[in-house]
Length: 290
Length: 338
Ligand SMILES: Cc1ncc(C[n+]2csc(CCOP(=O)(O)OP(=O)(O)O)c2C)c(N)n1
Image (tube, rainbow over all chains, first blue to last red; front, side):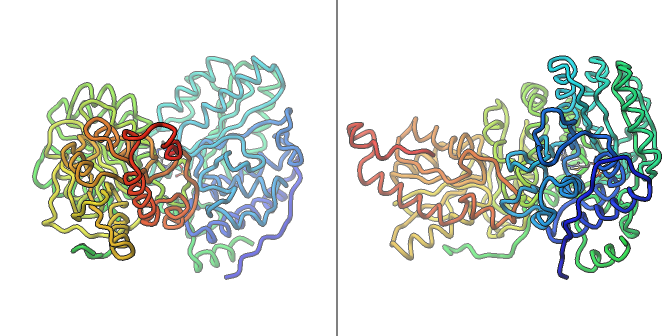
């Protein structure tokens, strides 16, 4: 199968759910195509968190400028669950950070699109190297700490963790410090698909209740359906308000999602955590994503 | 090749999984802890066979390592396995204090090691853990060369007393040892006899060493000694010193940083007992990157070709006179980076 990418890019501005749906479709298509070409990688998680990532990057919630990736005033996003990078790469490309065409190089030797994000490759828009679970959230805490108390600016920091990832104890050390330092400029998003490599999160090692845990660490917690654009928009608006109002608490958005969302045969199947579609599956998936 | 034939290809992690089940059949106090990737590091075999002796800990390597200590202090032989990237570093403090200082029967299986984990990239390519683990008192450290040796080594570390770490890989690699090929913890095996240069290798570089020895013989008539040093700690001082005395120069080869791993261990032995030139084949102080396993082996200089070239260089250095016999001005050109 011949794979081509169009070079459509999207603006970052308030939008209607219908528009988000169109962009998300494009992102999911990119994920399938790039993973099919890579012949390895993670399908399920990236597809499941696509709706949240779409609203975050294309709904006017984050300030960034793809023409000036290192702009000092930008808000920052740290992908704590590094293995979800196919969705981040697509989003960054569609935001205009680098040519969409480059998605073809995912996981190849010398590519800026490493199997797990590596800033040693100088990919514009990428803020930190991640892939060892449970570290990105601490990096985000450090950034938020710097913004709020040292540089005293009005920048925000977002981070995304998986629900399997939060089994790492270091996640809760990060949460404790975020609460302790009253980091209202920090927004932690948890991709709650109840899937990880060995099976269901509640069976491998239950992390529930997730919301009460973050609450106990002094977070403002928002539970949402991670595929409902209105709810995602409201949650990110709420975080913005928390930030504007200086509530003195970090925000956690617990997004209930389905792994593999948008591709019927991948949906809610943990077996799709770490594999790419083969040709037949890619064709089928791309047919569904229209 | 010197009596070693390619018997097919299989990942060493399968040898670990198989050995673990055999161990479980033999001893009912063998328990296994999972770190979410049981199907990758093949503890899934044990989980299926002995579900009551398997505990899923989730993505929590520090906790798993230390829970294993509690189990060991309760009379169990406790295995925990995850990727080397997370089973040797994330839990480093736990390994040092709780495992090694307590000196208990905790056995770590470090999977998906080295550059050959491939497209996952640098974060998942552990190339440093041997250096760290080698410095831990009480630790035994094994890097098997193929499927069969991984199986034997897994059983052997289960049967010995104390902390141990076995390192294995993701991709299918040549199988060439058999059930009756000797394996003993602490004993390096001389696979090929020769006295012109000694190639000391571990892991999947042992097969590359055999190829290099064959090429040295065919192209240059050089008789290389090939040594499989599957045990990195305790290193086999006798076999290595003999190689230094009898061959006069050495090449080490490993899928690891050249600093501090097998090469470092060999250098310590040789420098103390009988200094001869050593060339180091391995990753040269850089992180890895995405790519296909074989492509990466080429790019990072981990094939028989580098071993071959290093052997010639080591021989030349020996023949021109090693540093000990010359004035500094004469040997300056021999100094280069590892
Ligand atoms: C410290 C660490 N341990 C183990 C791994 C291997 N690993 C990668 S993803 C993953 C499962 C994560 O589950 P989750 O966060 O729920 O992600 P999802 O399955 O939803 O994509 C594991 C164990 C890792 N990357 N880092």
